[in-house]
Image 1 (spheres, helix red, strand yellow):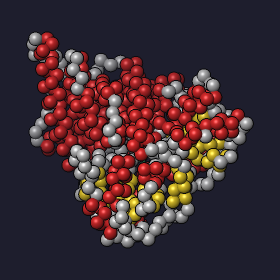
Image 2: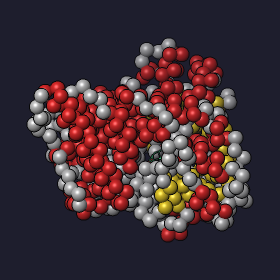
Image 3: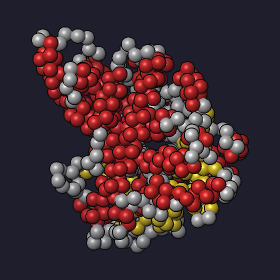
Image 4: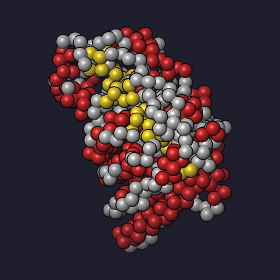
Length: 554
Ligand code: FS2
Ligand code: SF4
């Protein structure tokens, strides 16, 4: 195995024996083979497009699900990847047949051109998948800069796939995004692409990330309403409860519906916290609040919760025996020997009855904290007080906004983000989204004229709000360049959705982003030089020095 897709990769070089995340070599190799076959599907689908047949509605839903399953901490289940690879072969066969048919119609002869191995390798023996997976990973691209750019585009695309899949679950998709998905994957198999072509592909990935984030924002807000300012309870009640984590709001909706009136309470964990601010969910009395902190605290917090836990997406950490019988996965999440709640059938809800019955037999959660934390400061809330915000900037009450969105992680070096939050002067407002917020959302940093100093727009999936707010402020304040706004970016990254968000910000022309706690291992020296030259990207450093520079607009 070789995997370097996340921030915690071994020695900031690559995981080679077992993932720091807990992913074993077999699963890593199967994930590589799945991505390889998804590329093969994309090759045929692109060729069909060249012949005038757009098959992206057929290919994109499966490609997005497949890529989503390979995101860090989403799915650790080898059997699930075996099944996904079999499905990928079946889809590849269909797309190949359609391409060859249209080719013959157009040219009057059979297609006889060259194809990459992604489009041709096949075995009906599942045991071959494991061997083949060792040959088709990222190291197969020998040139380090080409490899770096291919992986940068692929990881950005994994983020797009996760966001796109969430939108599709809520009935929204866009042909432009679907077509880009296959175009981007096919391009990573094309040895004729120059480094400049690949830089262009990476930039286009950023543009498409903006489109996808906007689509997901529309899907979420049109289905569940705009998040409202909410004081989210972090204490517990005496009833048994179910803890729901991950990012899938449709699962949240159906779990709340099915638990109503059962005597079982519902709590969010980690990235599901923002569900507490949606009007469609707040109305339920048995939706109590948020329990615990970001994803990597789950080994302790899932134990003390006492009741069942539903993981709707990433981030799962290695499951401990103490709660193995209480944890469930659904959607693209998975873990060996953990019960998986199957997909909803057409026109029906998922069936969470097994989890609810189990909850009824459990003790209530052990209280970890008490009080509330503020949430619900997504784009609609912030823009509804835009006049107040602009006035506060103009009269100097707000000196600077600092976008500190992204991910949390285990590394001690992430204390940097807590230190920055504490070190920022009282006229600085933090704009956040994603689980990075847990490094400072309980610090009680106060407010500026009623505007909280930590404005939490929601999940990493809601990062569109942060870009939207910046673009709206640019209009309202009459500045020509997004970089002339009093906004700095101090981004915490961990997995591939953060790569999509980073590329999205770059495509919007944002310069001077600080990125930490380390720069990605998959960015080669030359690619980093391009990012520094074009966008002035810099690593996070000493918190005090960075705060001084941020406040000076550097
Ligand atoms: Fe946090 Fe983990 Fe949201 Fe990332 S719960 S780091 O994969 O998706 O953010
Ligand atoms: Fe290592 Fe991260 Fe890959 Fe897991 S996802 S194997 S920690 S690089």
